[in-house]
Image (cartoon, rainbow, N blue to C red; front, side, top):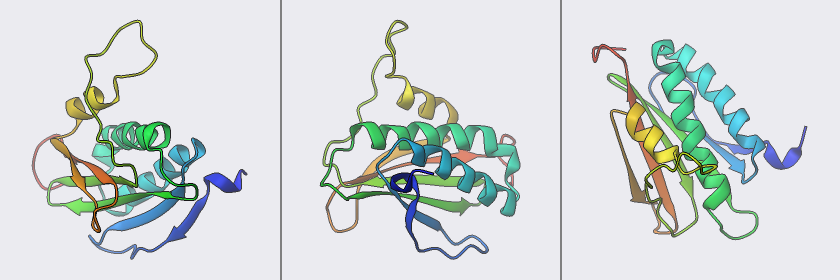
Length: 150
């Protein structure tokens, strides 16, 4: 396994609705590792009905951070999953100052559809300045299909 893509530090309580927080090296392999982690979290939280949408949203947000969030060497990307009353909140934190800009998808382009996919699958999403003012976090809430208690 490529050590650059492994979780480099984990600081999370894995019970109840407390956030699950992991830090990842900025490497494409972290996307699959983070998806596997989120899948386990959703099972534990009994949110398997949102798994497909949540995993795709995570993939798009984290892939954007890996590809576009140029920061200092050694800066990690953080994922944070929080249990919401009707689903899950997914956050991806990075140290880059540039904010993601949705684009009109070009059918001939290789990419550029990520935020359009996020907007279609998430109940809501947005971007905020990170605590400490360095970088940003992009978040999305994926809700249970029936809108009731997940």
